[in-house]
Each structure stands twice: as structure tokens, then as C-alpha cells.
Image 1 (tube, rainbow, N blue to C red):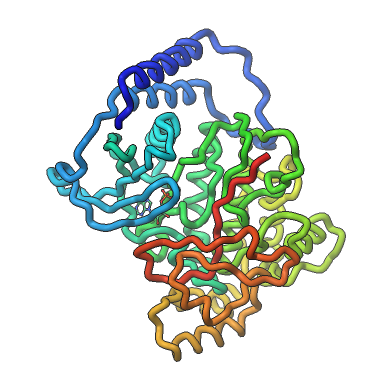
Image 2: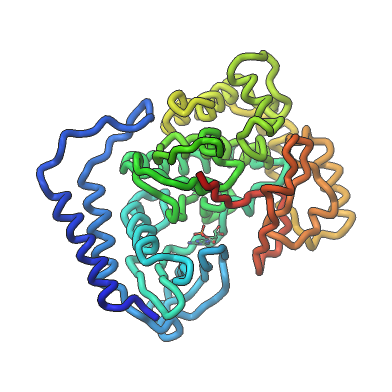
Length: 428
Ligand code: AMP
């Protein structure tokens, strides 16, 4: 059943009331939240978001998908619904349609994601929108530009990583996108490779996507949603009784973890909690309780480590802004850059393919063994064969991977993946 008229007009009057309230003379500006270099944004941007939602709510039509679109294939899938590649039957344009299941998605959430995506889409490094939103009996749907090479996760060779050149090219574009978002006083809250869409395998054109969890900075949230390895330590702390305020620094942390993943093909830890050995080692080094750089960080140059220290500062107040990463671009981040082991392997190593023959696998496993393996990943031949999007990791950290990591199947996905990313919701 579509949204009934009374629901829609209630929602509309709610939004109109809000907009009226916000067009009163502005109150004195409140100090910004915990970011050291506070992004500049304006109240106006928030009004525009409200207005976009109102317009979308007013114009949401019920459509017969098959009348207007030819479905080509499924691009992605999640608990929320799915993303399909379609061709617009009249215009002949290829588009990605995001379907959010009505059973699990409130109209308000759909309108928020759609409006935020639309609002941010002028940025060249954020996925473009067509201004198309509609509903069917089962789904709320909006259209996005189609990223023809998929997402970043697909091209990071597990345990090897991308070459520094490719990683920097990608990071540069993501940093601009994230800075743009922060300047609009928004926090993405789900930065990870799956949400970075790519248009070519060399990352010459990449775009940030998925604004389903994006919220205004400073807004209160009761639950922390995210993907464990990318979640900042202050949010992993389940002993905390009070709720959270959405803050830019959580994106900066996830961005730091993303950089590590791109450059190494591994996670630095399973979760940023004291019972994770690898995280604990990192904390000791970060807090200068030891001069010994943890083993998985030894592949970085001093400059690279300095950058990670700033992005992954344990205290969120001390974390840098995402822009600061630009000041490190002229420096080398990895030891052995380009000519050395990691990068030359990285640029030549294909992503793991479950269809590879056993001899190819042996070569791959041998090659991976020669790498200094990350804390989190131990390559088990069998796990390469798993027909899953994500696979559980073995780890010698004190917290077993079985508890918090579950296998997430992704139909139509042909590649085995060793990196693990499990969406979580920590209730506080
Ligand atoms: P999302 O829930 O929006 O993050 O989408 C889930 C997955 O679908 C992503 O990780 C991508 O692999 C794929 N996907 C989403 N949007 C697009 C798009 N516009 N173009 C190509 N693939 C997409």
C-alpha cells in the first residue's frame, strides 16, 4: 500500500511547520561541536534540505517500474533492499535504481536519504542524481547515476592493497567529497570502500555514495550504526550510557581506517576496543607509551605514520579535519613505493577470484604468505573459495571473530572476498 493521503499530508504539514520555524530571524550561532577546524556551513543549507524533502514528499508518485525501466541486473543488495542497473525505456539512459523496502524503511528515512543525496550531488566527487523518486507497493525508489566499475571494495586486492599512486588518486577525490559534506554540516557516518563507487579500475573517477546514515552534525543519536572495523573508539564503547552527538570526527576516523585498508588490503584491527590486541598495540604507540611501531604499521614512512596519527587520534577532539590529508600528498606514505614489494604486487595482483584454478590459488597463497600479514587476516585457502561477499576472518586477537562477525551473502557476486565488513548497530 502506498502512503495514504492523510499520512502524506501529516508529514507535509510537519515539514511546513519546520520550514516556517526556520525562516524566523536566525538565532545567535551556537558553537560548533568537537571539530578543531570547524567546517563552515549555514542554516540555509539545512532549510534547503527540509524543502527538498517536502517537495519530494509532495511529488512522490506510484509508478509501474516495468513501464518505464528495463531491469538489466542487480548491482547490490542489503537489508534495506537492493540497487538495480536499469535502462530508462524512453531516454535510453542507464541508471542505478535504489529500492528501499517499505516494510523496513520509513517514508521519512527514504526522503532524508533521497534529499541529502540530491543536495550533495553537485559535488563532482559525489554520486549524481536524476531527481527521480517514486514508489511501488513494496518499495520507495530513487535513481542515481550508474558507476560502471562498481565499488572500491571490488578492486582492493586482499592482503596486498592498491598501489600508492592509485590509492592517493582515490583518497584525494574522497577527501574532497567528505570535506564538501562536512562544509554542509553533514556527517556521512558510513565511510567504507563499498560506499565509494568507481568508474574505472585505476580510480581516475570515484564518487562517494550511500547517504542513508548521513545526519546533521550535532544531532543526537541513540544508537550507533556503522561497520565495525571503521567505527571510532568512542562509538565502540558500549559501556557508555548516554547517547551520542553526530560528529565529523567519526568520519575522519573511518577515513583513516579506509586509507589503511586501501594501502594494505587489510584492516588494522577488528574493532577499536581494548580487547582487540591489534588496536591495543596501536593505542600504546599512538599514546607514545612505546616507541615500537606495531608490525602492521611498519610498512609506512614516517610521514605516512604522522598522517595516520592525526587521522586516527584516539581522542576525538584531537583528530584532524579531513582536509589535513591534503598536506601529506606530496610525501611518500609507503616504504618501497612503486618499486618495492607491496606496490608492484598490488598493481599487478588481481582481486581474488573464486573461479581461479588451484595452481593460481597456490601462487596467490604463496605470494600472500610472503607479505607481512596484517593482524586481522590469516589467509586460509578454503576461505578464498567461499562464495560470499564477505568472509569471516581468523585472528589471533583476543576477541574471537565469530561473535561479532557474520557472513553476509551477496547474491550474484562472483568474487570471494577476504576483507570483512559487518554492518553493526550498537545499542546504547
Ligand atoms: P548502497 O546500499 O547504496 O551502498 O549500495 C550497495 C552496493 O550497490 C554498493 O556497494 C555498490 O556495489 C552497488 N551500487 C550502489 N549504487 C550504485 C551505483 N550508482 N552504480 C553502481 N553500483 C552501485
